[in-house]
Image 1 (cartoon, each protein chain N blue to C red):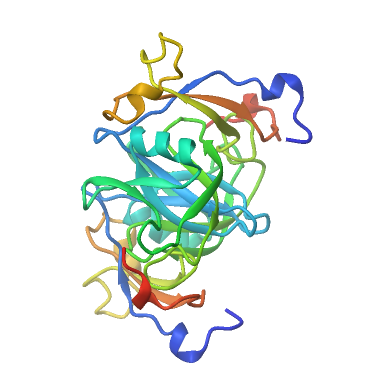
Image 2: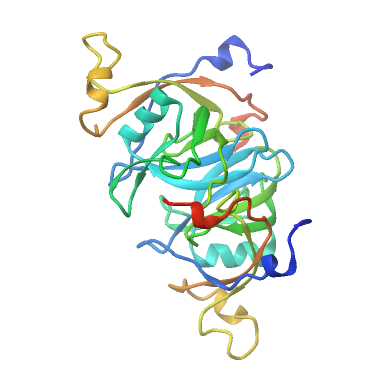
Amino acid sequence: MSEADATATTAPDVTIEFDAEGLVPVIAQEQDSGQVLMLAYANAEAITRTTETGLAHYYSRSREELWQKGKTSGNVQHVAAVRIDCDGDTLLYRVSQEGGACHTGHATCFYRSVEGVSHEGSDEDGDGGKEEADTSTPETLSVETEVVDDRVFDPAVYDE
Amino acid sequence: MSEADATATTAPDVTIEFDAEGLVPVIAQEQDSGQVLMLAYANAEAITRTTETGLAHYYSRSREELWQKGKTSGNVQHVAAVRIDCDGDTLLYRVSQEGGACHTGHATCFYRSVEGVSHEGSDEDGDGGKEEADTSTPETLSVETEVVDDRVFDPAVYDE
């Protein structure tokens, strides 16, 4: 904000563009380190609760219910700011994360790096699947991964 | 990676979990500053092209085509790493961004902060819409915003 002038800081109200299920994707980012922690989804109620309480709320697509991050595990997210993107269809929660964000025990859900891509069933000839890469969009795609972020807590204690 | 031991760095291959449209959301993050730049979507071909070329590719849902970020504007993203989340259904591109990421001229698409939430048609009594917050999930949600990130280039030159 330090360099923003009066004109630049004036922005019109934005109508959030929910998808057909009434949801928007939300990126959670640790505000101090900049580490991207997770992607989840929110409905209007989750956004309202988040801004009212300062604690990150989402909507669980699998459980079909409002979900306060860390309510049972204690790994809550204190939300310092909510940002919205140019299209109004994605949010960014800038948070301070208690414990770790991922149920695997890692600080971030993005603890693996993709080291290679192999199309399923396409590499039996040992060519690395390159022939198939340009022809069509396969339904499945396997990637070789490497863990690049250590665990920060015991996942056994994570109960959500 | 510095603290990762041999066991921790061994990770099984991951099958990417595409949605019904064959897409996964992709977060693009500036690797040096940690700034979250944008959220877009990728299909298998976009991911393959990205890993092959080192330049960020996505799939445009509106244009229904493969899309190399910055191909026409020059605002390309050099991809240093691709991360995948615990569920295998979201990617994170760690990039070095030429110019700016957003068509509005801002470095990031998340240049606005949400300063307030108002349910459409619910706040005529001036109670801040609080009565409605706990009852149901409205289809529309308007938010008051403030610009918190300056423009870095003239959007008139942005042609994609």
